[in-house]
Length: 422
Ligand code: SDX
Figure 1 (tube, protein in one colour):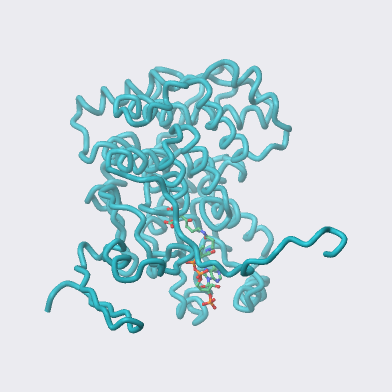
Figure 2 (cartoon, helix red, strand yellow):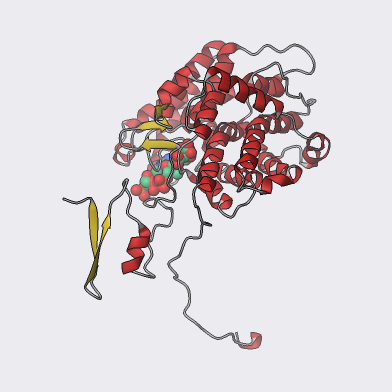
């Protein structure tokens, strides 16, 4: 039996055989037989938009691998910058390569003083951190005009380092601005995640010791969020990047897509949902509202995983390690009960709805002292290497500008009537 499909256009009786290659069939072959007939797949649920070697995930088996390495091993054995190197270069770094990579990132962690003196000062006091991040990442584009030469691999690499290095500085600066405390600049003596926590929470010039458990937990959370193949925000980045837009505007677009509550904004929505439910005795009525289609169980469900999200397991375990240090998040018991009730209810079981990466991550971030508005920003910091790995991979291939077709359902041709006759 050949690895192929045969399709017949019953209008003409013509047939064509198309090979099945790497779980895909080439749409160009399809179009030879059926010009003008498009795959109707509005949310790309059954469509491949990329050939990628970065990440593999299997929704049924419930595995996630970055460049072939299982997420469970990477989470245990590697730092976030080590994993970022892997995603971008395809191989784990040697000790020397990692040291040089860390130095490159450290050297690029500062931002122009205009961000602190002018740009950030222009936002309202209650500006949401994601709105600030999307704006300031895009603003970086204006400080590095040479970044527009995206077809030069050396230009791409320089901007990749800058973006990974500056995301924590932009994020921490947005937070400090929102709480009215003086900005803390990157400390060259600290590693990536320590530096971010210092820029976030160091009280002025006084000494600030990061608890190693919290630092390790946050670094692990960054690893877990580092990539996830063709998710909504990565796809947004690939589409914008396909027009040869510069990487800052490309990543800003990815950040915008991530901000939605169906995607990276879910970690914030989970906390607000738990707070709204308020108490155990309200869980059943909330679950009933979900089953009636009136509410969504945020942090549950996934387009690909029809099994427990492998990251959610690790996040759940990490949460307990953090709570052992900073005290249990009072919402944890509510979340555990909600998971227990949902996983015993046929509405969720029949739809294969399980906790995803966002269900427990917010509880951990909140316990670590991050405000809810920062949760998706933390997701963005983690996802930046993944976005950039896909952007770089796309531009290394003979990619074309993204331009999907449509199924037209509008009016047939008609004539404009003078306004008094409408
Ligand atoms: C992330 O793609 C990625 O890889 C994303 C991500 C990454 O790392 O990049 O993993 C990160 O975005 C995780 C997802 C975070 N979002 C949430 O937790 C929001 C809540 N989840 C849902 O909105 C939903 O599950 C999605 C958006 C995640 C997936 O949506 P799909 O694939 O379009 O699923 P669907 O809406 O077609 O749902 C199928 C059925 C529907 O019921 P029926 O019409 O069959 O009766 O399941 C129901 C849905 O109503 N359903 C839910 C539900 N999720 C799906 N019902 C209640 N609560 C939910 N959360």
